[in-house]
Image (cartoon, rainbow, N blue to C red; front, side, top):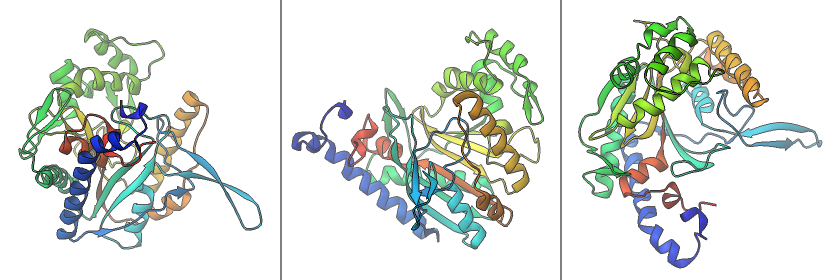
Length: 344
């Protein structure tokens, strides 16, 4: 693997260089797409008072020393989301950021602790608009490198065909014969009801698995392997308890305006119709951090400045896209280290 080698050795760099050149072509083409659409490129600061408040995200922490020697805890952001939403509150309307972000406990074929997250936001536009952006960006990346097909680990997808769109509930029914809606009651999930159906679908369920644990097991084992084959898939309408930053759907508040994009089985992007209710956002953050404390014995602070800005933020939709993964798919790379210039 590239990770086990010294990437700066000339012969190793020579092997990686075509993928890195393709990365640059994709980046430039995506910037062109946003420029043509009237977006402004922004640069979110990496040091934040909170790295994000999702249970299973792990951050890098550091100490900021003030001029008088006092220490203040800071974190490298796991996403530019909080900063970008503050900019929406400030008056920006269409923004994007190629952000360097940092996540601990992540390393593998598709994961690196320091990577590039492409995030963009459209104020006062429905989240269907950013879904269309996702499809357009996949095609734009393919055109940039002159490829007609994406492939990864034996799977292929046509980047120019309109994505399949399927709800999470439909996908659970289709691929696991599970009635997901029957296990939801408002903000909560019926753990035993979902466990019973998961066991019937031949999944191993532990006694201490929560509703969310079981949901993830079904998603990974039964649903994700069938997504993004032949063309991209938009997996839409997540349960609201799996969508901490998304607003509930008006048609059924048990589900949220959250979607993910899959290509060749690779999770590529995560999008929301953004939640703007600051009180509800606080409640969700506190619940996520209570669960983090239970599982990992730690919690991250809540960015009070973010919640204050959220109360003034206009309705918006936004997406976080793993740019390195898109570069992999476009270039044919089989490991994320092949598309990162200095993969230490």
